Length: 287
Image 1 (cartoon, rainbow, N blue to C red):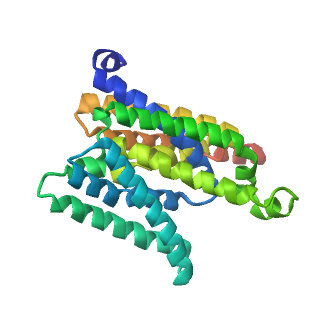
Image 2 (image 1 turned 135 degrees about the horizontal axis):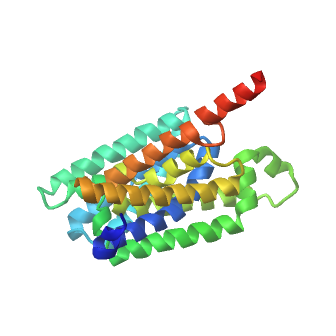
């Protein structure tokens, strides 16, 4: 089963990049799930497309410039959507939906304007089997930044997620909550941009959200959920790449499909609030 990773360098690079991206994104996904903001993460993923498409159109596909363009528009859409939601008195999720759909549409139009010079499929679905050194370096940077900053700001970030009112009234520094929140969304943007090269604009948030959802059925504590989320992310990457190799399927889509299958299986048999665990609990109560 592991022979493709031993025989083919592109498979080994894809597995390395995917597993590193899982380390970068899965812990952030746990916080997104706890904050009930998974759709915001999806919005950030879609928002990177126009910047990446514009950079690809102007530079011929430079990984570095596409990364910078994706980061710029992702941040711009994220900030603008928040302000617009408040100004227009829209629910925040509605504001994000409007802006990320606008970003997605404009990105596709920009890519199409290139007359075939821009690989739209790569922008939308990624190139997990074609990660270059720059994309791998960005993945490692995102993972390192995620682990270090979450480790440093874990307590204020956790309190800001679970009980922001307590954080504001607990007597700690007033800047702790805003700093934790800004750092969190900065990491989310960085990880999404890093994942963009492997999974594309449509699925770049998959390695962040899906392992975290699956981890909810295997652990209760936040730290334990992060560990399980990373493990499930690794499993999804390996399963997806093997499926892609043997079934000749698109690698990015195969990885996301594998992660979805892991979430469904976890919801059925996991020890925490899964279908089986709830049934066993009901049986024990009746007995």
